[in-house]
Length: 115
Length: 110
Image 1 (cartoon, chains in turn red, cyan):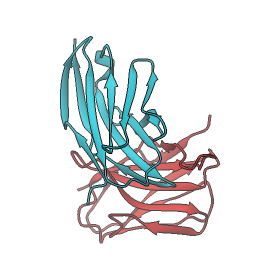
Image 2 (cartoon, helix red, strand yellow):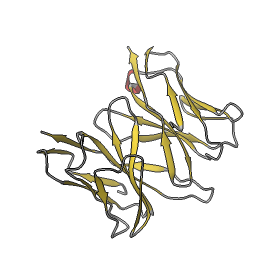
Image 3 (cartoon, chains in turn green, red):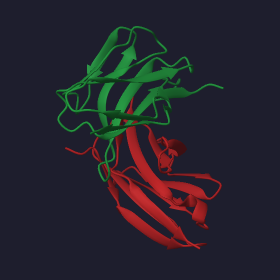
Image 4 (cartoon, each protein chain N blue to C red):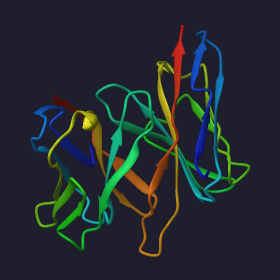
């Protein structure tokens, strides 16, 4: 079945460590996104990529890095520079329809806890 | 500046009642307005969406009402069921840029 796979689902990290969250999609979508979700704050955009080898910062990119070497993959690294990394991270992808904006599909999320 | 404002933050409805969640947006260039449903520990799933050339869209018990002049849109859940208890997010989009509301936690009491 087509979809977005995020791994790991749960991750624990010590302060000062970098961690990489995986996101893979087999929907053949061009655009991919990373969002951070905190209680009461909705979804905040970290990074997005509209095409391979290109990505742009979102609203809260500080302390995060991404790469887009393949169309199917958009990993997110949470670096030690991110001051408050404990959160629920969501990967998404979208395609542009003939009328403009396409539907946004989400993965199941990765919950990162910093100990 | 928040592009999409959503209210209420939480909502409690009796089974069989109508749940109403409201959103307002600023940018008149938005051309796609989806609603997402999210259960605890899961990713959001598209529930229903509307484009600004129509004023209402209905899918089963879920209806979006869209007021272009007021820059507002709302989700109505008719005959609300306990299984509808979830967090609902509105969003507005143009191209591949999506902006989300802060979410509404809906609880339907049996």
